[in-house]
Length: 141
Image 1 (cartoon, rainbow, N blue to C red):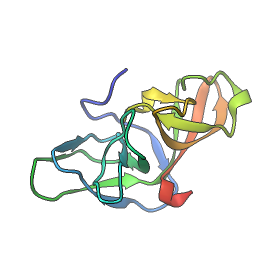
Image 2 (cartoon, one colour; image 1 turned 45 degrees about the vertical axis):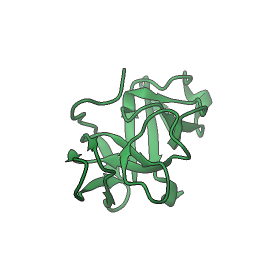
Image 3 (tube, helix red, strand yellow; image 1 turned 90 degrees about the horizontal axis):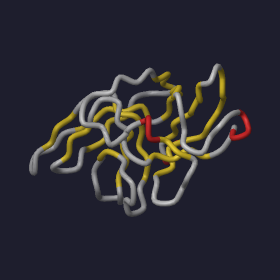
Image 4 (cartoon, one colour; image 1 turned 30 degrees about the vertical axis):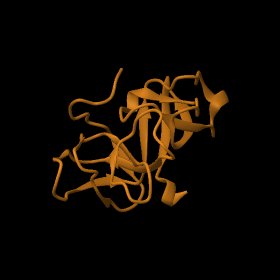
C-alpha cells in the first residue's frame, strides 16, 4: 500500500480533545491521514518515509487542500486508539508495548521498524487477529 490519495475512514477512539494544526503550503491532507511536521517552523503534512526529524501530530479527521499560498488548519486527534489488521514485523502478543512507526500517512503501512520512519504510538493489544494501537502525538508522550 502507498500513501493515501483519497479519504480513508478510520474507526478511531479519541482519548482527548481535537487539535488544530497549520497546514504546510502546497499540501493535501486526507481524512484518516497520519500527519506530522518536519521542523518547528513547518506546517502539518502527511507522514512519509525519510523525513528530517519528524514530529507526529496525530490522525487527521478532515480533508484539507492548501495551495502554494494562504493558510488553513487541519483537525486531528493527537491521542487515539485504532485497530488494524496488520503491522509489519508484528505477529501476536509478543510485541505488546513495542513502538509503532508510520512508513506513510496510511494506517495500513504501520511497522515496528524505526529506520527512516516516524514514531506514532505503541502496540497495546492483539485480539481476534487484530492489532490495537494507541496513536500518541509527540507533544502528548
